[in-house]
Image (cartoon, rainbow, N blue to C red; front, side, top):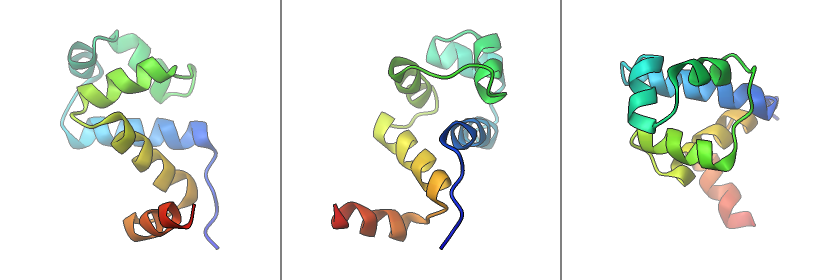
Length: 92
C-alpha cells in the first residue's frame, strides 16, 4: 500500500507543481485567479489554508475545473495514478 501524504502538504505541492508547469509566477497566477501573489506564496509554503472559494479561484487561474484540481490533490494524497482514482470512484 502506498504511503499517504498529509492533505495540506499535498495541496501545497500540487499548487506549486501546477503553477510551475504552466510557467506562471505567483504574480501572474494571482492576476489570473484574482488572488494576491503574496497570498499564493503563503498557500504554497503552507502558512495559509485555502477556503473552498480560494480553491475554485485557483483552479480557474490554472485553467482547471475545481473538481479536476481537487482530483489531482486527491491523487497526491493517496499516491494514486488516474486508473486507481477512477476505480476508487467506482467502488463508492
